[in-house]
Length: 291
Image (tube, rainbow, N blue to C red; front, side, top):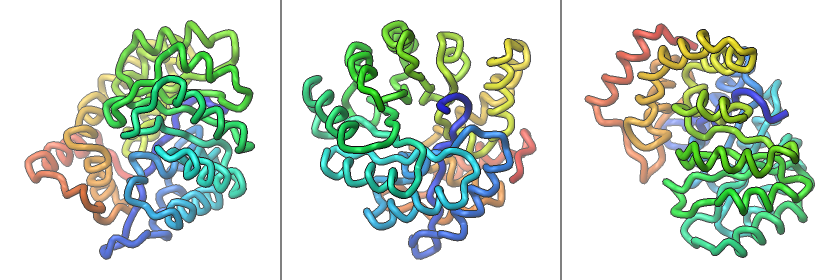
């Protein structure tokens, strides 16, 4: 299941910043037609940090209801009990897997990290994907700890966004006999990660250019390196533009130009600087991206 392109989808809001349920459904219906392997609601890109528990659960329920591809629900928290509640809800709602970020801010030691994920895995009957993104959490899930966690039956994959190919290589080296999947969490490293044995990507870019991202990953998987490399460089300016400001500010801005539901950001995120938005708009126009 955990192979290919998985867009980490945005959460669209109405002008009053309430949840835009109809817009969310339309965005998912669009992605259903693009060849993606699955969707990831309620991750960082979905502004999960500013969703209430009720909104979080509603987004997962809508995703499960209208997605024609597997749903990997973001259910992580720095509070183990909260993560268990959200993960159990995702399982009961029919999600295919849960994505669990490392416990941010608390900065637990390795023993605490292991017990956090182990406890959730034991109490929740759903495949679990670890999520390592030290740039945002302030804590790094080390390869040795990933390997230890991969021995737990329902911990099946990791979204690796450390930005370190050495770390990716070490994780794959230490888990490759177990069937454990490594997915890139960095859009600019999709091909390098796959060259090491990674299985695909949980992607911001694929919200905006899903078909080309899928084509690149599929070309590489089939051994067509020239096509994959060509698409990598074609997409490179857009990949960089997705991070001109803090994610998901640029991708949510891009949705506006693609005709997809987006709406405002929730504070403390603020709109994109005009000069950076113009760069993003020009790149989208050059690529000819439209929903």
